[in-house]
Amino acid sequence: MSDSNIAKVIRFGDQKLFIDFRRTMADGNHAVLFVHGFPLNHQLWRHQLDELSKTHSVLAIDLPGYGQSGPILDGTSISNLADLLGELVFELEIAQVTFCGLSMGGYIGWQFWKMHQDKLARLICCNTRASADDEVTRRARIQSALTVERNGIQHAAETMLPKLFSPTTQENRPEIIAEVDQMIRRTSTNGFACGQYAMKDRADATPWLSQIDVPTLVIAGSDDTITPPEEMKAMADEIKDSVFVEIEDTGHLSPLENPKPFNLALKEFLA
Ligand code: MLT
Image (cartoon, rainbow, N blue to C red; front, side):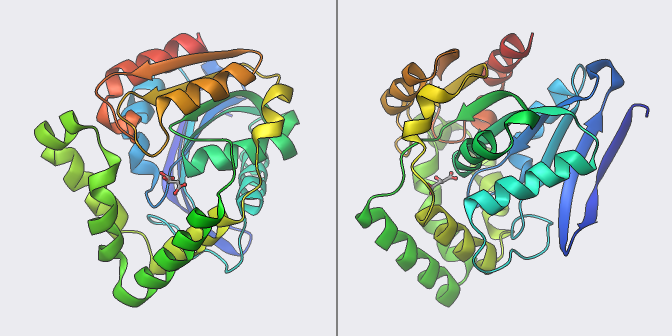
């Protein structure tokens, strides 16, 4: 094996998956696995892939139904997605990963911890939560899936964009908002609906937090109204070997809104 870069759609079982895998042998058989939030794709991590690949092997994917990947199968659960990633890691001959997930990616991360502990060296939880949905949120997800199936993905872009960013990003960084708008519009309606159904039925990971024994980094955005920093700090406090970092002037999409402090936190954690 040697250093190599792959950025392409691969056939994986009966699915087509886009992967961006930059392998450096200096990192042994380890890689940082980046898993995006809903309803986005691997481009969420573009700053981290460019920076961290100088020293670490990095792997980012478009989950099925998102970005350049093929469709997601109806009924796919969050634990199915964690299993898919476990199989991918095995297939790519990566011994262990640092699992870095944002929001929905974080939900998949809890399941990855539960089901693939042998493949998990460290955990990075960004702008996410451990608790499952309440009934109101579950109903809202069904409604949102039906609306997008009826009206198209642009409806999701229009309703979600105002909630994703800090006031600073909203006022000063129109290019970031345009970039995320494009990411959402690239999501298939099938990916959007299946994502909502999968998240609606996800397990409550709160009881697992005190059992997590891998080093864990928890990153919050000071202005994140979807997964507020106070809730994330309380979550970090439950995890034995955890570090909590709050990034200023940042909303729900911290790796894209404020990549400098985000990358610094990552590098310190991985050092
Ligand atoms: C995400 O960014 O992945 C979503 O906010 C997750 C969710 O809808 O719970």
